Image 1 (cartoon, rainbow, N blue to C red):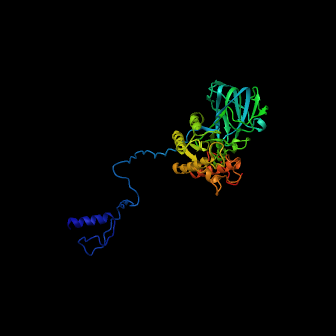
Image 2: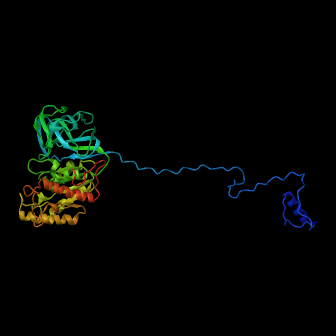
Image 3: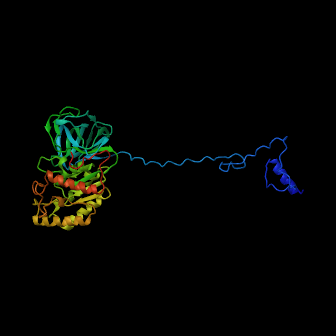
Length: 435
C-alpha cells in the first residue's frame, strides 16, 4: 500500500466515517473500516456558522470614540428694542404757569417698558414731576401711577425746542392701550395745531400722583409730550409725514384716533407715528425733519402725503425738486411710500385752475416715479370728476371727513398688507366685519 492509500484509510478511521466512496484500501472484498470498540470517540470539531459574525484575527478590537453630530444652533430671537407707539410733531408753542397736564394717549405697540419724550416750546421749560399709568374714565387712572425719571432725577429744566427723553419705565402695555401721562410743568411747551387728544385735562397746581379724576379743565391738544416709545420685539414701525389731512383735522372737534394713520394702525396691527402738521408744505417739512421725524428711533417705514399746500405756489419743477429732496433725506432712514394728493374742490390760496392742473400732473408724476405708491386719490375721487370727493368723504371740499379718513386708512392698509406688512408680535387683528 502506497502512502497515499494509507493516509486515506487513517483519515477515514479517525473521523469514524463509513464512507463507501472513501477510496480503495487494496482489499476490494472487505467491508468498511470501523474504529476499535475500545477507543474513545474523537471530539467533535465545531463548524463555524457562516451567518455568525466572527471577530477579526489579531487580538481584541479597539473601538475609537466618535464625535457626536453637532446640533444645529437655533437662531436667537432679536433683543427687544424701543420703537414709537405714539408721536405728534408739536410744531407750535404754548406757555403756562405751574400746572399739571394729564393726557390720554393711545399707544400702537405692546411691550413691558415705556419711555417718554417731552419737547419744549419757544422758551424755557421746567418739568418737576411726571407719572404714567393706564388711563381710566374722566381723567382718572386705571392703575397705580409709576414715577418717570430723567437720568435718575424726577424732572428737568431745558431751553427752547429741546427734546428730553426719560429713563425706561416698567409698565406693561398692550396694543392700542390708552395711557394717562401726568406731568407738572411751567414754561413753554411744544403743542399741536389741532385738538387731537380728547379725554385729557389740565389743572393748576401739582397733581401728577392723583389716582382719581384730575379735575380742572378739559384739554384736548397734544402738548409737551411728543413721543411714547414702547420696548418689545423688533417689528415694522411707520411714521406718516403730511399736513392737516394727516394730522387729522376734520371739524374743530378732532381726535388723533380718527386720523388715517391711527385707523391704519388699528387695521394693520403696527404702530403709526403721526408727524402731520396743519398747513405745512415741503419747505416746512424739510426744515423740521430732524426734530420731528429723524429724531425717532426704530422707524422702518415712512409714508409721505405732501404737496397740496404747495400747489400754485410752486411750479411743477419746484414741486418735484422738493419732493426729491425730501425723499433723498428719508431713504437712508426708512422704506418710503408716497401718497397721491386727494381731490381738491376749491383753493384757499392761489388760482384754482392752476391748482387743479398741477394736482393732476403731480399725481401722474408720483405714480410714474416711485415704486411704492398709495393711491389715496383713486379711492376718494368721484368717477365722473377727478376734482370732487365721493359723497360723504369730505367736510369742506379740502379735508376728508371721518369716513374719508377711514377710506384712506383702509387703502393704505390694503397696499401695505399686500406688500407683506404683518401685525406686530402678539397682536391679533379681528377679521373684516368683526368687532
